[in-house]
Amino acid sequence: MNNNNKKIILFKSVFIFIGFLLAAWTIYDNLKVTEVVNGAAPSGMKTEVASSTTAIQVGPQQIVTLFNSSDCTSRVISTFGRAITIYFATSTSDSPHADPSINFGQLVATTTTQTLDAGLYGCSVVRAYSDASTTISVTEFKGWR
Image (cartoon, rainbow, N blue to C red):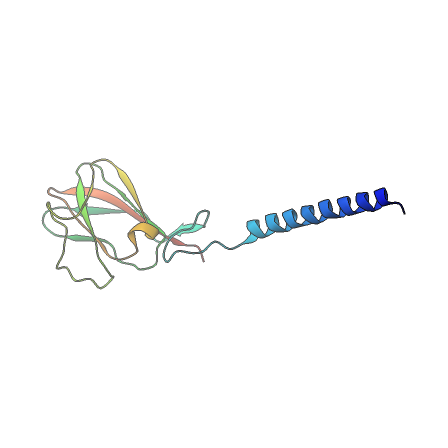
């Protein structure tokens, strides 16, 4: 076998080895498991409705608990006639010492739909308040197990 043939075989072997490494890396990258953030819905994760979409009366007469579970991937709040304020509790057993009011809480504007991803907002108690009576709809999604 002459010297040129040895170089060609070595050259082909190196390219085959590099191709094998690229194929193995591509397979590994596509099969690796995405880290799951506690309570969040990773991209592409299947979810199901934890309960049906529910209409809830919110008004100044009382503070209304919208969600009270600790296992969710996202929650959806839709307002129609009035804006509401919502309060995110620090745990599912958070006492009502910090309820939403006209001056305290996160505003959900009139006639909007807001999705609360559990990775950002958590899965604790959510309470609502409105300065005038209104009906909103809420839906909670949980991970598909």
